Image (cartoon, rainbow, N blue to C red; front, side, top):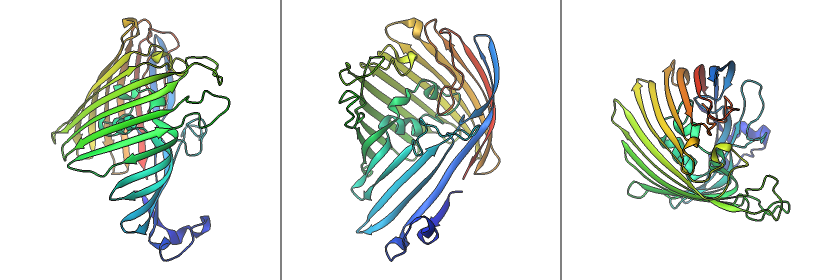
Length: 357
């Protein structure tokens, strides 16, 4: 359970008491996910300790302070880490997953810092787990998920609709990079009722095809569209998503996206059993310029809840690559089983445990 820590308990780390401050609160939260994975990649078999498989390993602080008139100051700091060796993820950043401060009122929420994009918010909400064994997790392009130097606005819900807009300055005035490199704009529209949700997201992001990026390097713009639906039948939660990528170049980031005209989709279902559940996922990546770059993802995972905070899990997943594709079965934060030879198929199994606090 997340532990609520009132300001009076935080004097040692610089929280000053006062009439207004005393009403604020800070929440410490996190997840620890660890297990073991067996994989067969093109006939090469490995067994390894696994970190962040079903849920990303993280810890964070979030809080708010009432400012009067229904307005709150809000913030979040979130760190990602590797439980196997204790190192920080997101290139060693202390709070590389999220780090923002903002204001919230009846007009919506505005926040500045490291923010999730509209695409990442949808994948987190509507991909039925976005964890080990799901096609969305295996095919998602990491640079589209969060942005540094960004501002994000989330509207209030009106007639079940909400809107999220983000804008980020990628290079952020750097004199060693192209001026617009990494600039990201995203907008997301969401309709949600008790049992149904539908999302439509659109994003642009500036890349450079150059292997060594300099101030004068050529840039181009990647365009992304993501559509997702989810329905809770009670006995079954079913969902589907479809993403298109057009233009730009991400060849320096991941070889699977060297061709910039591609799609991927996922069809998934989760059968809840009290607090536990069985998740199925099927999806395909389509390289529109070269069908040899296509890939197909399969996954099934059972999560068994020992309590509301502690979960045991086991799963089996496979990736079938075309002769020019090198996708893999991923953890929630990175490629956990590298495919060094394009066209190699991947079969993997996982067992592990997650604890939430």
